[in-house]
Image 1 (tube, rainbow, N blue to C red):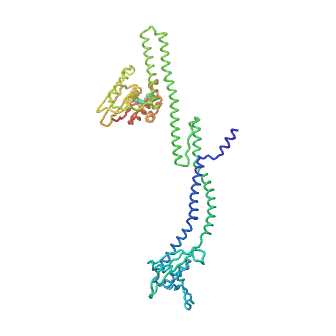
Image 2 (cartoon, rainbow, N blue to C red):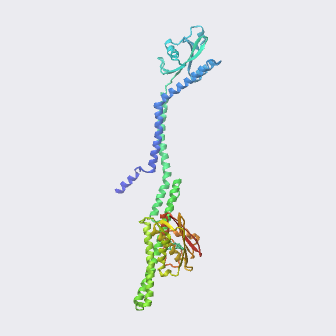
Image 3 (tube, rainbow, N blue to C red):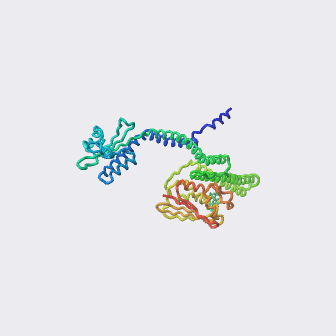
Length: 478
Ligand code: ADP
C-alpha cells in the first residue's frame, strides 16, 4: 500500500524541477507578449488608427497648400484624392466649390458648402489667425466620423481660396475581430510550443546533471574509477572538471591514507618488535651484565624515540588538519629559532656525526608563529639528516633584509628526482625505495611544512638534484 502511494507521488509534477521552472518561464514569457498584443489591439488600436489618419491628412493638406501656386496643383490634387481615397475640394471665400468642377457646374450655380459649416471650418481660421485646422466631425448622414482638414490656400485676384479635405474613419472593428480570433489561436499554439520547447530544452539541460548525480552516487558507493562526463554546456564542463578534480584529490588522499596506515603499522610494528625482543633479552640474558644491558637499553630508548617522532608527526598533522590552531604572529629572530632546534638534534646521540654550518647575515628577524616556524625548521633539518647518509655536512643559510628573511637548509644527500619534486609536498607522499632509514618518515613532514607556510603566506620551495643534494628554503616576511 505504501509502495503504491509512493508510485503515485512520483507522477506528480516536481515544482522545483528544471522542466517545471523552464515551462513556467516560457509560458510566462509567451503570456506577457500575448497580453501586450491584446491590450494594444483592443485598447489602443482605434486611437492609434485615428492618430495615423490625422497625421496623413495633415501631411497631404500641408503639401497641397505649399503647392497651391504651382502649375500642376490640380493634377496633384486629383492624384492625392485618387490614391489616398480622400475627398479634396477647393472652395472660394463664399463657400462655393472651385475644384473639382463638373462640366454642367459652369452653367448652373456652383454647389456650395452650408454656410454654417463653412464658417465653422474656415471662418474660424481667420478669427484664430491660423493657417489650417483639423476637426473630427460626425456628419448626420454618415455612420462613421470624419477627419476634416480645413486650410487657407491663398489669395488670387483679390479672392481667398480654401482647401477642404475629408477622410472618413472606416471602422476597425471588423479587423479587430479577425485579429482577436487569430490571437486566440496564436495564444493556444504559443502555449503548446512553449510547453514542447520547455520540455526539450529542460531535458537537454538536465540530462548531464542527472548523469553527474548518478556518477556521484557511484562515487559515494566507493567506486573511485568513475569519471564525470562532460556535457553540452560550458558550465557543465566546468562542473565536471571540478568534480573530476575533487574525485582525483579524494582518490589521492584515500590512496595515501591507505599507504599511511600500511606505513604507520609497519613503522609502529618494527620498533615495538625491537623493544619487545630487547626487553626479553634483558630479562633472559643481559639482566645482570651491566654493559650489555645498557647497550640493549640504548636500543630500546632509541626505538622509543622513533615511535615518539611518529606519534608527534601524526598529532601535528591532525592538529593542522582540523585547524584547531590559529597562527599567532610575533616578531622573533630566525637565528634564535634555528639554535633552539639544532640543540634538540645535538643532544641526540644518533646525530652526533652530523656537522651543521650556519651562515647568517643581515637582519634575521621575521614576523610569524614561532612554534610553528620552529617546527618547519625541525622538519627540514630532520629530512636533511635522514636523506644524507654519506656526506653529513648540512649548511643552514639565513639572509635577511628590511622586508624579508630567507632560510635555506642545504644538504649533500641523495637528492630528489625531478619527477618526484612535485609530489613531495603532498601528505603521506614518500619517494619510494630511497629511504636510508626505512623506519623513519611518514610522508608528513613536508606536508606539515607546506601547510604552515601557506597559513603564513610565505614563499617556499626546493632546488634538488638526484645524488647531489637538496636546498629546501622559505622566505619569511617581516
Ligand atoms: P618523510 O617523513 O618520508 O621524510 P616528508 O614529507 O618529510 O616525509 O618528505 C617527503 C619525501 O620527500 C621523503 O620521503 C623524501 O623522499 C623526500 N625528501 C624530503 N626531504 C629530502 C631531502 N632533504 N633530500 C632528499 N629527499 C628528501
